[in-house]
Length: 127
Image (cartoon, rainbow, N blue to C red; front, side, top):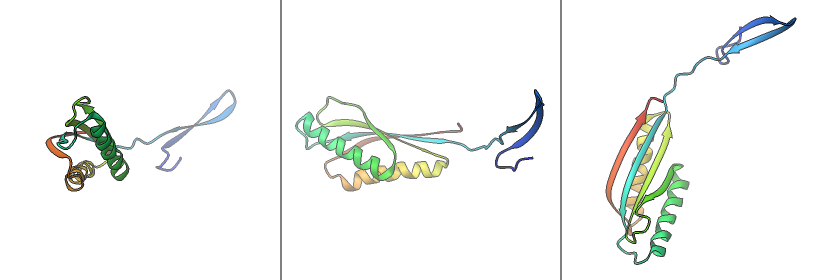
């Protein structure tokens, strides 16, 4: 018998060879995917180039600081508006929601040139 970490073992004699089969224990963990869609306004920009500099800087800082997936998903050709999608996968629903809340607070607190006009949040659980 193999320990509880690996599962249960069974021996068999196949073609004259002793073979051990291990059936792994099933771990029951839930995966939670927290998703947030942020609609942003960039009132100080007057060109797509200026907008892209701000958005790419914001995306890279958030990605590095919070270890989340983030991308610009809508309003790609608008000078003063953009929509960012942020997602976090965790085994704790509370932790995932806290990370998303910290991302929103970071944007509000550090970027004076970016206004959040709408926030949509959703948590998918039980995978």
